[in-house]
Each structure stands twice: as C-alpha cells, then as structure tokens.
Length: 108
Length: 118
Image 1 (cartoon, rainbow over the protein chains, first blue to last red):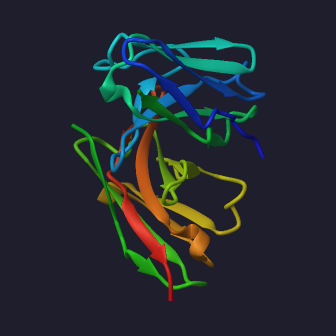
Image 2: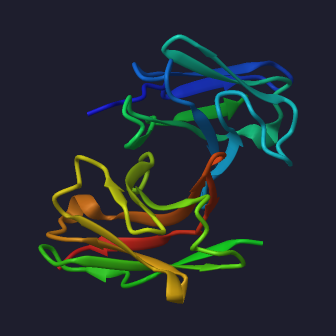
C-alpha cells in the first residue's frame, strides 16, 4: 500500500525556521496537503495543493514541492505553532487518500 | 458555517460491528463539489483515512480496511454513515468525519472516541 514518510519529530527555537518533509512516490503527480493538530483538537489544513495557504492561516506557513518530496516551512516559529503536523495526498491513481505518520513540532 | 457532528456508541464488543453517523449542518451534503469521509486516530497515534463517499453514492475505501468497511449517504437527512465489521481492540480510536474539497479535508467533526472491549 502507498505510504507517505515524515520525520517523527522536529525541534526549533522560537523565531527560527522549521522545515518538515514528506516523501512519497506519487507526490510528483498528486497534490499534497498539510494539517496542524493540537492536543484534543481536530486537524486544521494549513497548506493545500502543495503551496496554497487557506484564508486565516498565518503567512509564516508555506509549502513547496520537489520531486517525490514536499516540505512544510514555518518561518519565525512561535510557541503556538507547537503541534503535530500531517501531510496528506493520494496514490498514483488518485483514488485513495493517505496521511503521513505525522511530525511532532517542538518549540524549545 | 459548516458543522459536522459524529454520533454513535462509544463502546463496541469485539467481533461486532461499529456504526457511526455524521450529521452535516450549515451546508449541503448534496453539493457536487465535495466528497465526505471518515478518518480515525488511535490513542497516541497518527491519522488513518478510512474511506470516502460522493453524493452519488460512489465509495472509496482504504485497501487495508476495505473488506470490513461500508460507507453510505442519506442526503435527505444530511447524514453519512460508517460501518466497520468484525472489530478488534486495534479499531479503538477517535473517529472523525470530514468534508473533502479541492482544499483538502477542510472541515472536520470534533471526533468521537470508540473503544472496542468486552
């Protein structure tokens, strides 16, 4: 079955830049989405279609794509950004959705 | 504002069938612009897509769960439902329903905890 691979954890100090990667064979042909989930809450989409930012999401969140890897970048990380982040995409046929394993972002 | 609310038993016995319903309010479940889906999250673990349904009734299931999952939709009640058969402790999770649009899974229910235990 198709899988998306994320690092389990990323740590940064406030004000620094956090980069979270997501790898998958179908990513060159399928859009990626990024979700932020804080404890006890439902996930919230922070990036869609690789690099688009929904209204209400701070400009410090951005997304990029290169080959089989997509990256979520958080510039000028704030304490409130501490959360779990999940990438999501579809398999090569576009029929089945899949989530990455999640990355815990710790703000030191 | 669109809202989704999951409902159903919080405790299911092993080998039985888990049944949940998602009620959609503040928007149309019949819109051709959206799919509707179920996602689960075991305690302390990541998100797992279970399956999705279109307003026509077309369904798409996670291959790893396909033999046990049925998702249906009732547009007259603005509801879609999940049935997961032959459950085990591994099916214990928070179950979320969500809307799927071009912007991804853009609206989520708060989720409902389902425990599989005798």
